[in-house]
Length: 258
Image (cartoon, rainbow, N blue to C red; front, side, top):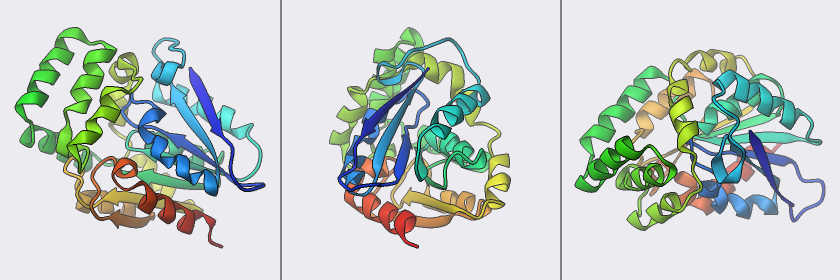
């Protein structure tokens, strides 16, 4: 159900950065621009339930996945931080709540109902003909290929540069993971109350030009959880693809400083 891909750091005794992709159903191949962070961390990419060739073991609840992940990560030695993009931010947050890691980075994670409602409104407002066609094909086929095609057509909702869609189109996605767990994004606002009580490093990063989840609503979510909030210019929902070096420098600054 859970597959780890490790990338050795260029420095001795580096802390580990646990990296979890969004979706649900996208793989960590969508986050591999973060490979450059091996200059400061040992990277541990987490793929779950059919993504990137990991095994799909039948429908599992969010709590089951989170508990299994926390158990695996707790066995990793040394200092550990968790990073999650979008949906992956929920799982990364659970690692902090369950004390499996010492710090947290959430990128474009929609914790509140208001933020999710905003995402739905923006999706409908920005629909292109290509996105509508891809969505209809996904609804009809419900397979990995149509799922990847649908998400790749999000265009400006996801990326500043349309050419970036190839990363999603060629991703090793899991349509089953998406279908089984997409509703798990609902009702996560309570996590912010738990996070608010944790006095460890909590970083929230948002793209200033995110058309799916506007920076203003993400800032509000971050404040509710008492995150250290940063917005990155010339960046949309997939901040690590649009501005990997800026994101990497910010993570290093925030997590590694005393």
